[in-house]
Image (cartoon, rainbow, N blue to C red; front, top):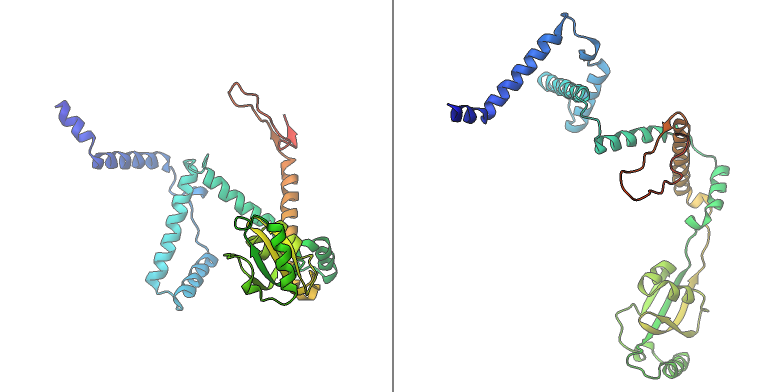
Length: 294
């Protein structure tokens, strides 16, 4: 008999029936009046129905049939029911994903700038204040000859001789050692050259004169003889050339400032207590804990 009861207790169907009976008893006890309380009333407004219809039309390029509309409304009600019941059961508590999502939604609301466009005067000031972010890099057209230090015991002497030959008109293809690095660039930016050779190599190359072969310039690979054939100097574009980009960055900065200001104002209304962890180590609490703190 005991074995039979244990087997029956493990049946999922029995669990389902017991849960259903408990829910039925709960709703029977709290039901009370025939009119549902406010938190149990769901009103699907005409605006919400219109939004459902608009979403359907955007997807299917036609209005929904009545059955389709009824199904969408019922799906909306189903979502609302489950959402409210989940809140009532506290399922939103202590859930990092829910907390992060709610924080993101509030921050998004606080970032709203009401569509205000900045004037050219304001954007020009922002452009000049952040000129390094918008400045066009120097661009170079160059050729380089590589000398491998592993193959040349007297590297300094070899670079001197080859530099002389190159400036006398020798073909660069016939001079130097094999390399997988680019032998030439056509109006390449300083950062592009730095990615291939190194920041220090690119910094030295952009300062070389145009016309003659120069060097050696050293990279992590070895020595290089370099000829700058053309140069476009770095410049700060006019606002009219990059207005959209400047406006985008300006609005991003203003949104961040507005969000931080709103947080500081909200933060003042909270009293924060930070308790140390239950461990032997003494924690170092930074100045993150500000405002009303006890």
